[in-house]
Image 1 (cartoon, rainbow over the protein chains, first blue to last red):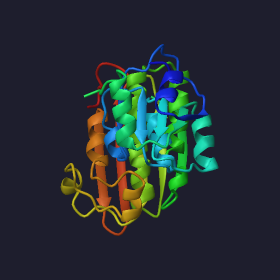
Image 2: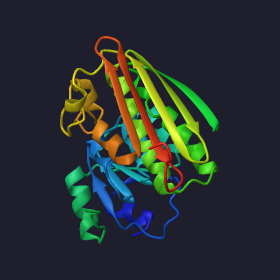
Image 3: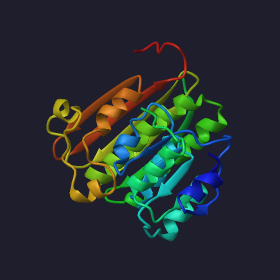
Amino acid sequence: MTLKEIANVLNAKVVVDGFFDKKAVVTAVASDLMSDVLTLDEEPDILITGLTNLQSIRTAEFADIPIVVVARGKKLTPEFISLAKETELCLLTTDFSVFKSSGVLYKNGVKEIY
Amino acid sequence: MSGIKFEYKLEGGDFANAGKASSQIKKTLKQLNIASKTIKRVVVSLYEAEVNVVAHAYRGKIDVEITVEMIDIVIADEGPGIENIEQAMQPGFSTATAKVVSMGFGAGMGLPNMKKNTDFMNVESEVGVGTTVQLKVALVDKLVEN
């Protein structure tokens, strides 16, 4: 799926159209526990999370995850958005829950990484 | 061998700035054309260390030295210290507060993850004084001193 298709199926808003150089989104991880994300040996294309403090952007930055989807329609602070811009991440928001976002992406062919 | 040196300061409780040092080191390592997997190991470990200082200590200092052979990081904090380092190294052991947990951390995974991602790790701590963590990631096949 392309980033545009991802936004489409999640009914998501692209808040920051950052740097994503791969042709297609292939894998995703869903977590609110950043410690877990930081232990991944592979790099998923998407992090789906309900965590809206700066640590989720930092975690994506260091775990080499180019796209962050914030679920549950959570409000984002200006600091959160500007950090995503600064780190050149793609940032999407959706009203879908983490569970539904994951389910919809999985149904559309996005795979787990482990 | 002397290399490129960086120094950063950390304040306890300042979660907004946790990760700044790691972010700058990531940029520098990218400019130096270090392999992306190696960069990830360095910045994940350093970020875990930054979060530890912000979560547990009063203040801290990070010294990073990049040489041809390795990246050598020392994170020294003034804080409560670690009573039992062996216990702290066990996956799942945590003394983190609810606030730290709300930040997506505090699951007792930080120190073990730093160990996993580095070629050398040493933790020294004195209760009531502070903790010093040294991390090394090799840029060559073999680190002579280890």
